[in-house]
Length: 340
Image (cartoon, rainbow, N blue to C red; front, side):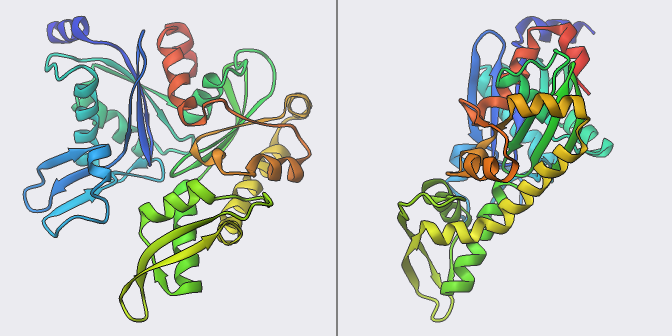
């Protein structure tokens, strides 16, 4: 009890978006203080953590046999408990300038489809990493607060949050989630689709980082009229020699079509399941897109065509979830309403 109190004195309450691709941390009164990839490099035999975040990401696919670069979060949930705990601890220390006595209160955003076991894993990881209190908030709720939707009003607010591991679609009204659907199809699946397409069409094997770069730089889901190109480097599967290839925007669009259609189907399903009064609000206000996946060129136009509704992309889609979680830190009564 005394230690909890002392830890509280030194602490600065944090909100964390523990994402599959990136982890963002918001410190009370300071805003976003950390934005790092969710990657940890460990020594294979001893399990010693060698690097966390950006340093570790640079090692992905490039490490010798005795070092592993691991992404401990998969599909928005913890795939490796010990490594996640080490990652959270490292980020807390980084934010608090390596102070050992710090025991902050932490809000962590989690996917809406998360199971009880997965919730417990997130909670336990954060507590083992030094948090004195852990609150969980659903990602779509946090994203809706982060983009400034009036979630406390009796109005229908629809948000689509496309992250690295999950796509969350939710209708929110009066501080509660009226309908939500979480599918484990998002940015990672898009990268995978690009890898498979290039492999099938050109017999070229490219890495995860290359696929992600292609997606970010020339990824489009709706014809832009530019048909930009980008060099993709990988290994020729026929003769095993490294090779460079020009990849077209149209090809990326073809590669991503199946993944994007799955996301559109979930949005349509959510609209079908929304109560009529709230659906009427959504007709007027439309749908807000958040998360890194919403930044793909033409996604808003494609959704507009498919649903006939106004579509808005959040001002800072990558930070929406952590900003929303951060806003809740300041209002303890509101936190009790929206935490799970």
